[in-house]
Length: 450
Image 1 (cartoon, rainbow, N blue to C red):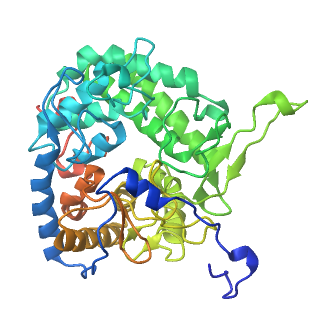
Image 2: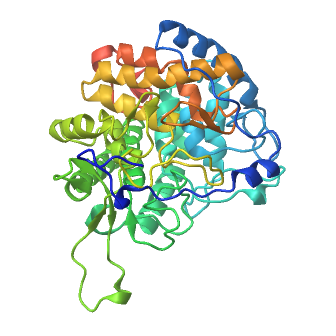
Image 3: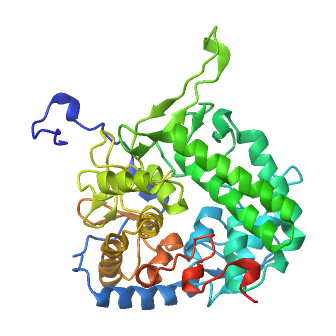
């Protein structure tokens, strides 16, 4: 029973039931049920050392060499998979191991760039038994960001030049298919749904939804295109994409920001005309507090005043996002909140995920909440230390109220960010930050080799 705001409960506070046939799911996938629960150790430096050493070794199990379907070295989300690249996973998972395995991190990106269609549509590289025709879906707009990050690791940007026209086509494809009114981006048919069962998107085929997650990625993608263009010496393109970056930032802050709740929300654009006889000139917020609502912090979109409200009223609120074990993927006071085991798609309606906790921690640090960022990340690192000590593996996500493993033992993917998240936060280094970190002597793209 969810507690009401004033300490009482009513029938309306009862959560919606989460239904998933977990037993049948496990029977179809032998060996996939989660390991037993384990004691979560207190936060300590020993956790960090254990996690760093174990995960560096496990990262070697997910390296794959070129194949007919994937001509460049690449990385997979866990050791049991072969010939699969998931753009969002691979972007994050390589950040902490790129220095040791740059060819595989870079190669994963090259495989994705290689499969962008002539019309600019990106493909989620997911061959079936090596058959290229098995590649499917439309990825998240992040390949320009990935190019920027790889360029920083390689201390070279010239390798991007042959791919520049491909990136331009891809950006134009997303604009043609997804650009909506107010300068925002909508979801469109064929676009991959992530987070998997996000209640404002999942199951809403054809709904005119502009969600925070995708608009944040588009903002960063424009930013990356501007930086890449500048590094490659195309001043005109750099100005164009910098202008688009700023236009989208203003649109997100004007239309997706709710000044009453101090929160970013997805929008129902309401511009499908079939059921209206007059023009729809308004948008309505989907007032569901998912971790996507916090991602503008990671991208640097909010003003300092907006960031303060999001962080202090929501991120650090124990009744909403702050768990003893990391960041809840959906606020605890939402009626659909749960950490139930689900797969195909996986459950982002409450459980603790690395892909939610760690980017938001970087967002906290960006806005001056470094101590709180370290504390947030250290909570999940402690869970990982307990899991590795007890079971020898990590899981896809964890129960937000107990820290117990929920799904998919052996999952690595973005969990690998735990290798250096705490050291990065202590030193003020964000490997996902696309801006020049001049105050720490870290420069991006073409300037690094000067």
